[in-house]
Length: 210
Image 1 (spheres, rainbow, N blue to C red):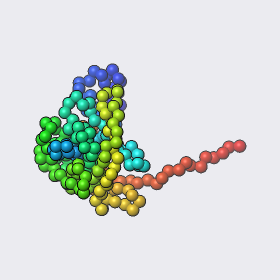
Image 2 (cartoon, helix red, strand yellow):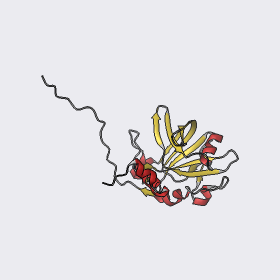
Image 3 (cartoon, helix red, strand yellow):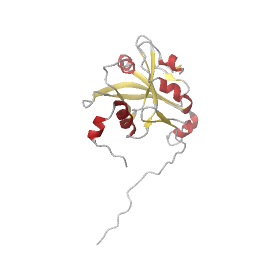
């Protein structure tokens, strides 16, 4: 096996290091976060750090990079308190990936990528039209990460929209049926083809010895 220790990692060229360290954690969720500024400018950006925080109340978290650069998503969430999470599927991978480009504030990534906005009920943040799973969230809190200056954003799920053919009677969402993508590293996308559900596991009987 190839082995790197901490000293090796510290000496790596920048691009090599970020490719390596963004791959070692395994496959990550592939989502588009939709926001809108108070002045009405929509924004959409790809994120691979969205994670489950809890089910009761229903909370999701994601990480923002340091705010020393333009962070339209972060600013819009703080301004309006709402945002959406939309699952990337096989048909929009290239369009979704383009939203990682850094446009100036006021330029819509929807327009530049070819993705379409969708508005539901009285929710101010835009969903992404055609995505099989769409979530509307309200901002709850943020937690600065002292180790590297990133920020953990936590939101409460207020709305859930799921394509009918993905939904199962026990509440399970079959993401493979929707060709939902995952991200490997920074720029590699994969679409799982199989889904092997296993039963809830209980401890095996332990033989007692006398």
